[in-house]
Image 1 (cartoon, rainbow, N blue to C red):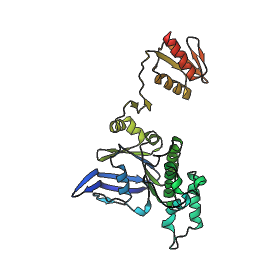
Image 2: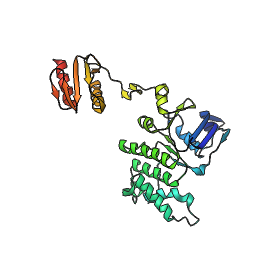
Image 3: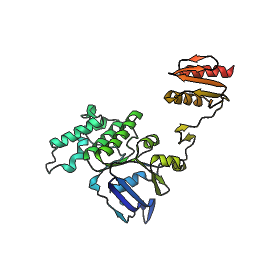
Image 4: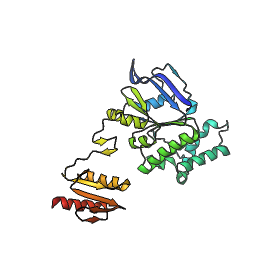
Length: 315
């Protein structure tokens, strides 16, 4: 059973406006466990960043009956851009080691090794000596994640860590965080809008839902309709992971094949307005990315296949 890393009971989160309070989350119970990656999701403006700051001790809660919070055990990565004159990447990452330094504030050999390991882990070696003011938003985000990693805390909270990254780096960051949670037994909480990545990497999802939190493993929250209800997807079928396509051509195709070549061919056909199912007027057989149509036409690519079917439909 995973060790409890952080917990709150009856936590209320928000901000005060004069003599009144704006409540974002009301009397919620939270737990983070060591070795788990948790993805925190919800609509924009619902209070995800405020909750993370409250958990880290940066913002006072409106109320809480009990907590085991220890801010010295928490590293947090926010979306705020860092501005500093003539600071190099390596130096900024090194600030994560300051809690471990003596009064001389000099990095030891051990500190240097930890920093080098983080640079390698996030592929930042090539920009280690660059001025941080010359970095792109995506590069700076990776640097801030590295700084949190070298802080070597049992808990890491990250607010939209993949917001400015391309697809390849978004996948790499999420896989790195998942690996870090497992191998280093850390509790990692990520606020994100990356639903597709969260469903495939998170051990647990937190869903912000009208001042409350709904929690569960990704698969259960997909199948019980919780994600559909909260996000109200338009034209997207979460259970299949596909955009809805209208079968506007009035042509049904019987597609025969397997594996990823079948899935991508089916995707192309449905995207172009064809219905795929049994008893179609055209039968297409796939073998090693070669396509045999029942009208005798043989195609060498999906594009060629689509052109042949379109010609057939118009004839």
